Image 1 (tube, rainbow, N blue to C red):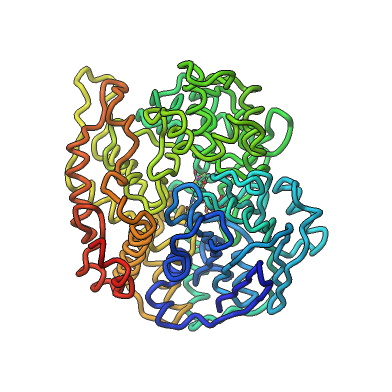
Image 2: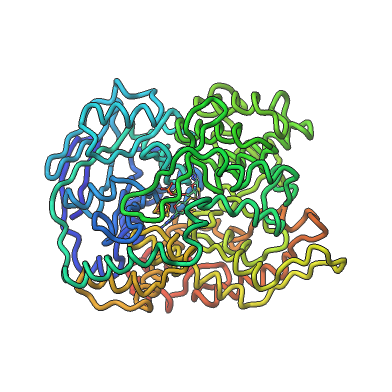
Length: 603
Ligand code: PTT
Ligand code: SF4
């Protein structure tokens, strides 16, 4: 079922999602993209006409391996295109148990509200007493009101103040919706969504489901890499990225950090006090440390990479404070790290007065609070994201983004496959769609001691690899919706997901079927971008930040004409034309003919 709540009219109604739609789009990102294509066209993302889609998938609510995720999507106020994020949260469990696959929030309230869903009962309640609170306190208060057995998605002051990279937070440290999904909630005066579900979720073949899930839960702790994963989780990547000159350092001006040892996975282990994670996961990776103020902060690679090396911050307990503030205010750590790095470089070069310089901790903490509340001109400029800030200050060369979404923590001067992954990610620069850099480094390792200049490899195979990963990471896992890390980090065979999916639905899908759905969803999302950008859409939208082509770091930089060839290769694989727009044949073969009336003028 699909639950619709209109905050303007206060009408609540539910619709059945027909089987054809489920078969074509499966769930999660697939459903979200279809709803946004059908219903959110040419609107201001922060107006009541935008819609917030909270979409579960077939894996959610059931005891499936690391299947406690949820997709949150809307037209992005940061990029103006399709935006979504994936959050681990008990809301995924409760939403399915309340009987819904997805929730669509429409309109806007004129006063702060929160939505309370308990099975078939849906209320829109006053959030006057919650508005202004941070996300940790909001969830705590809501649990005092409704009991502990609920799922909560909430926004903090950043979402309320329409910071364009505000995220949605759950469980004090799970975050989702990098392209401003928190600001979309704020624009609707929606402080939180609270869900309690107690119904049974139907499973087509219960015997097969129980067998496969029992086996896979037993298998995961036996997989190679499990013990180290349980120690460091994603934090192990700091050391690896530094060694391979892929770390973002000082607004991506450098790719090796002289203090990497004081912010890496081992430094984190020395500070760790607890672990937290998403529902139904038996390889939990949320590492909790005590920060400089003695408060709990959950560290992941991206958070530390962007709020440590990228802003020249050498001590992990300071980084942990900044990271906790981002969670409490409800803003994306990656985008925050990029806008701070931008402001610091601009300050050091004299373009901004009184901003913090790299590594200046107190001034940085002060600026973060000012951004969350849009307290002054500089803070408000940065709250609009790095693209808008760079446009206002004419500092394009300092701005690390693709399509307006800030680049996550991989520096790509020598890694064209990863640059292509950023360039073609369907929400803007995010590594979640294709993390090809691990494969890329594995195939052409750096010889640190070698005196020979590193030769960048632009083989067309790189485009193939990007598409393959987008089908799995941006496709399969975002459709189910399940955490991809058992597969990424421990090599869990993808066939497990297919078997479990078929036991839940009673269908007979293969991995190829999933890839086909993934391709459908990618092309639909691409059509969404093209439609929203209209005549101004261009293949340059798929270029990575200019800095990677112009700045020589560690003796190398990307070559634009070689990148362009890779991009053309990518378009061919996707069945898109030279401008990066799906052709009529592609749309028809992917069963996307319904977009043709609107897309015909661009094809
Ligand atoms: C994700 C992005 C990431 S990806 C990180 S750390 W990473 C940052 N985390 C943030 C945070 O924390 N607080 C905050 N205020 N902002 C943050 N922004 C950043 O958001 C996350 C894990 C991680 S940790 C990763 S890789 C994997 N991501 C998955 C994904 O995208 N899809 C999927 N099917 N499975 C995934 N598993 C892993 O989940 P976005 P989470 Mg996230 C504190 O939100 O918008 O998708 O951006 O969800 O529950 O926090 O788990 O080194
Ligand atoms: Fe969540 Fe980490 Fe488990 Fe994935 S591995 S489900 S991110 S706790």
